Amino acid sequence: MSSEHSVLKQLHPLIRPYVEMVLRKGNVGVCMGNLRISDVKSGRPTLTQTKEPCGDRFKIYIPFAGDSLKWEVIFDSCQPSNPPDFIFLGENGNFDPDIEKLENLTDWDPKNPESLVLVIEDLMREYRCYQKQLIEDYSRLQFEYSSLQGLEACDDVEVHMGNRLPGTLDSPVNFLIRLPIDLSPIPQYLVKDDPGEDLAVLLAKFHNTEGLRVTPQLFLSPKVEHALGDNTALRIPRFPTGGCLMDYVPQVQDFLQKQIDYIVEGYQRRREYVAAFISRFGGSVLEYDAESFTKLSLVLEWNEFFFVLHIELPSRFPQDMPVFTFQSCYHLSKTNGEPFVSVQKSYPYSPRWTGEEMAHRARLFILDTIPQFQKVSVSSTKL
Image 1: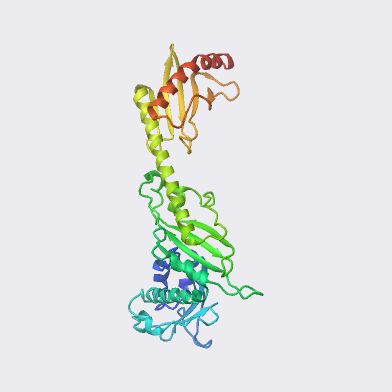
Image 2: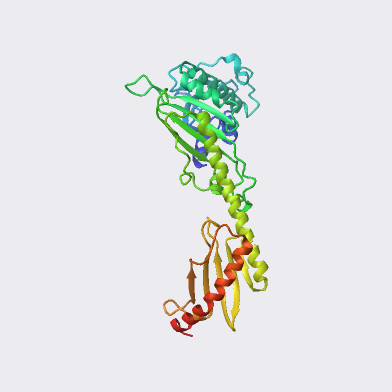
């Protein structure tokens, strides 16, 4: 934010509102990435004296298909109401949009602070068409792009052919694909602190136009990443040798859906487990996690021996079994002076059991374990 403020301070006061709106609303493309402004300069003669900032040209960086486009925007601070000019850097002069198709540039409205945003949107629409034209001479790329159109597992796609690799006649090509994703079934506690967008995009990098080597990479918005886990920990399927995006993209989309289903099922099973214990041990419940259902504590008594049973449900429940921690209400550990505890990680358990069955089996295990726990807590600690 401080760098944006520094950039804005350098701009002419009548040009600044256009750029402010670009920084605030200029989220474009499949990844809805933010635009970045840098290298503010002035085109005024060096001898011109002025007390106000006179920056009227700058570079704008636009995320597109896994790359970053760099364009130069040129206003005239002597006539700030005039529409800007553009220089498309890094395109070898080949991107030359038809100005007649840039309605917001030909009909520039100097009174609308969103005018520059609208022109950039027009230019991006034409740039996407330009990139589509570039791949028309390559049958493999054209097939990949056309096969994604209308695919249920693909909401939107951008393609970008980069500059030729040094010493070759080939170019790397990126396909950036927005995948449909619905987090509405996800428990609210996982997404309540991230009110942003549900966004998952797949970047498929073709290292040459023949597609002999393709490297996929998954990117998630903060909200999705918090719900499903770090994208580096999510191991998406490998792109098969000789495979195509039409077959691969649905595999990745199915992979994400299975992650959502897995999280929802785990939450529902944890809630069922805790509910079963509350039903069976209702009067003994000390506390429980009513949000994520990952913890439960019971105060139990056996032959006038009182103890607390802490139950922790792992993130991979029910595949992984809960951890039982028996805590004495009387005895302190000799080593640290804290209540004596015994942790149990192995006992009769099956992930296929219902919550009621798990609670019943746990009760039997507790009854079998209490006598030994009482004996050890008395002999191994001091009163």
